[in-house]
Image 1 (spheres, rainbow, N blue to C red):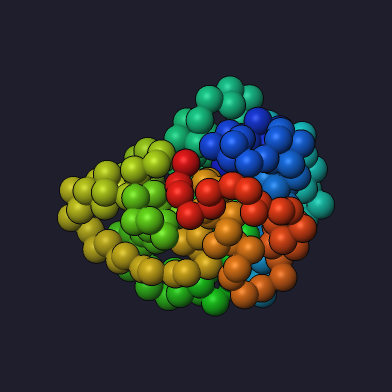
Image 2: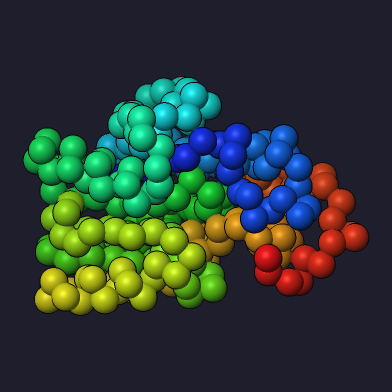
Length: 217
């Protein structure tokens, strides 16, 4: 099963506040999530998908694609949401989980295929963020093989946790999945990347000429 944790979109992307007001950040978060869900919805080999959230917009989008919903009433963190969702998957006998965020608008079906093709019979697949610090996709087989701890520097802890299991761990570099949008520099990268996703079209309408997009922050 593919799990997508979604916190409240109206409060999303606080690190972009130097260049985007709250309304713009909400619009961007919604566009990126829709891009991710559209890619999954149009992927012929897509397994079951569940959006893990209590956000009204996120849940509405999930249902519009006929994806499952796992309610996250606590809305504490992605880590907490995925821990609860993983327990539900295990209780249902689901053998593997692929966790991806809702802010990787350049994700493509061929990248998802690569993840599942590389997946060991028992073990994991990790896809780091472009900066090498975060983790933008984690496949675990079995579903609860090791706990996930998301954050700005989650990749090394995830890799270490995977290695402790003594099961194979495959690390893949996938450019579309690698590009998440957390900083002003990421906005520039998104706008300049090939493609015409909803998020790209939105960002290209904005004028950031007066902001230091070459600097993360």
